[in-house]
Amino acid sequence: MPKLAAFPKAYIRPLCEGSMTLRQWVALAAPLKLDGLEYYSGFAELADPSRWAEARRTVEAEGMVIPMLCCSPDFSQPDPELRRREVEKEKTWIRLAAALGAGFCRVLSGQKRPELTKAQGLDIVVANIEACLPEAEKCGVTLILENHYKDDFWDFPEFAQKMDVFCELVNRIHHPRFGVNYDPSNAFLAGDDPLELLRRVKRRVVTMHASDRFLSEGTLEDLRREEGGAQGYAKRLRHGEIGKGLNDYDAIFGELRGVGFDSWISIEDGVDGMEQLAASVRFLRAKMAKYWPRPA
Picture 1 (cartoon, one colour):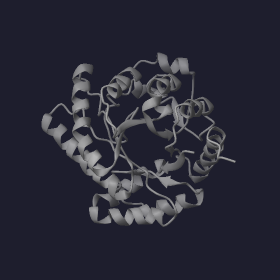
Picture 2 (picture 1 turned 180 degrees about the horizontal axis):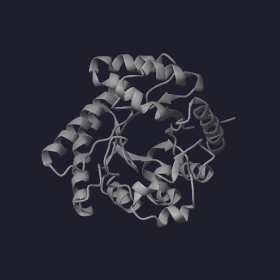
Picture 3 (picture 1 turned 90 degrees about the vertical axis):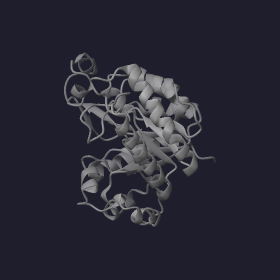
Picture 4 (picture 1 turned 30 degrees about the vertical axis):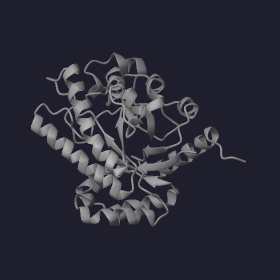
C-alpha cells in the first residue's frame, strides 16, 4: 500500500518566515498518525545545515519520516548565470533532502516568462534538470517534476503548466533518478483534464500530491473559457477538503493501482485548519485501503 504524508499548506509562510517552528508543526501533525511529513526547502530553520539532522530527528521521534522535499527551482531564467545559480541551489536542496532522509526532491520547470518561447524553454529546462541528475544519483535521491501551477513566491505561472508542454518535457528526460509528482488539482488550474494527464504520464508517476478544489462560482466550462490564462483560474478555484471537490479519487487511484504505484501520497490541504486536514486523512486512508487492500 502507498504511504501517506502531509505538507503544511496552511503554515507555509509562518514556517518560512520563522514565526512558527518545525517542532510546532510536527506536534500539530503527530495526532493524525501519518507515515510522513513533506518538507519545503524554504523553511527558515533549514537555512542552517547544522540544523538538518535535528529536523529529521524531530519527525522520526514521532514515528514518521520525511519522504519528500518540496523545492521550486526557477530553471527558466533567461540569464545563463542565473540559471547556473538555480542549478547549484537545486543541488544543495538534493543534499538537504538526503540529510533529511527524503528519497524524493521536487524540481520545476521555472516561470513562464513572456519572452520565452516553448522551444527555448524546453531546451533550457531539460539541460538544467539533467545537470542536477548526477548529484541526485550520488545522493540516492529521485528528482520529481510536478505538473505545477505557481510557487507562492513567483511572479508568473509555471512554464510547463499546460499538459502538452509538461508531457513533452517529461518525455525528453529518461533517467532512473527522475519521475513525475502528479497533482490532479493543478491540472484544473491549467484548464486540463486531470485524468487525461494522468493517463499520459502514469507510468512515470513516482509520487503524488493529494488535494482537492471546488469552484467558488460558475462551471468548469466557464473556467476554461476565461481569458487571461491560468492566473485567472485561481480566482474561481478554492482548496477544500479532499473528497468534496472536483477530483475523482476512485478514477485516480484506479489508474495508479493499474500501473503498480506503491509510493508516497502527500496531502496538500488543511488551509482551513487541522480539522479539515484530519478529515482529508480519513478520506484518503479509506480510499487507499479500497484500492490497495492489505493481504488477508
